[in-house]
Image (cartoon, rainbow, N blue to C red; front, side):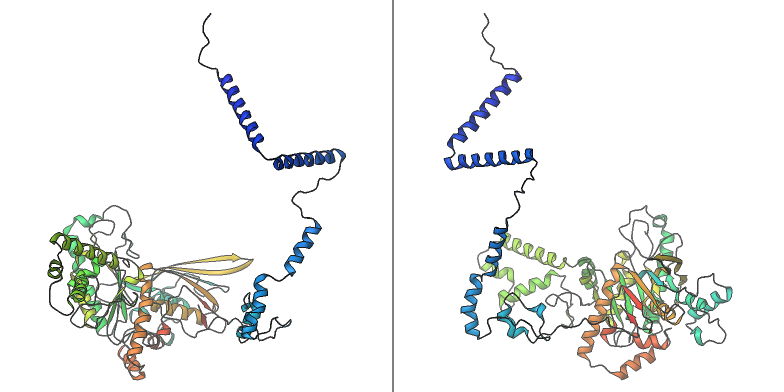
Length: 560
């Protein structure tokens, strides 16, 4: 007879597993105390009772419900004072000599919402606080100055706009003539003064270069596309750059002569705002954003002094040192600070000092490298952010203009905008500029069974164009309207920086009405109307704000 096989079938394996499981459960049950066994019996008995009640048709009691006696006990416990309250009644109230109970009817002057948990204790201190009624939105008779470029503007009104139909020849001609000659068409005896002509005038702007097959605003350096064919043609590249240089020089000369209030230079990686003297500052100024450490270092190497007004106070760059550059992007300044720290006014080299302390050359080199790396990392934190904005004034703005003229990194070497110079945008004409118009689209929207008329404008919307358009809307039949904007993200920091610079100049120099009138008179030929020129030449920092939406009320005031 063959010996039994050592292998087991799956059924036998499962049978042995089940037996072991039952054996372990029996051993655990034998180890339990008697109280647990009695509890199990009580539970079994309760289950049998519930089962019998179900068979007899009785309603089964919810095991999670609380009896009335338990609820009464809970209420009694809540009514009793807590140990904290008892201790506070015996100690804090006796020390401070305050009433132990809050009056049943507090006076109207007491803000009951501001009373804390220890209301009995804090009643004396919170009695002076009154309930403040919510203040309505402030209303303004003028629109704030927002230096950020807009890419889209949408206006909605319950009344139809007066320029819904197609432009006539006379209306288009009057709008173009009024814009090119910087005329006020409302008081002109020969031009068409209809709302359509005035609306067309507010939608025009000057741009260079103009290439119809390329979208030059907004410029996106991260867009993935094939390289432009102009990048391989040296003659085309040279012709574009030569023409752009002449246009840029012409526009800056107009700014210096105060015949142009401002203009924008839109490159692939940054945007520059140039402002004439009297517009926000007593001298010409320039704002560039966003910047990187490499860009700031390149500006410093070309002796372009700048400040960074949006950085924290402890890291802000100031130009008070005169001959020294104000940028913190150089590691030399950090090393110089270390030198002053260790040498205590002596002219001893820090490396020499460390070597005298017994450190080897490799250790000193490693320390310098680590310090440089920490400095570079700290300076790169604000790169491509709003805090990286750089501001230049006076002669430094002229130096920035010279640097931009000779900067090779302004033109991309690859991509859809390869060999294309930066886009110049201005409200006044200049050499080589092309007259362009915003794209307008009209529509009707139904919301909550109410019909609204909508008009949408796309393109580079300049600050003066925004003011002119909203003033025209306020004086038209659709006086009650709301407008929303889409900003060009890199230019959002311009309004913040302009406000900070205006506050600093106001603190340094007291507001002078004579200088304001002088600036306004010098800019009388820049193409702006008298009311708008008065607003843009005002030194008041509160007039500069970044706004996302505007509402025009029935009384002609603005809220935002």
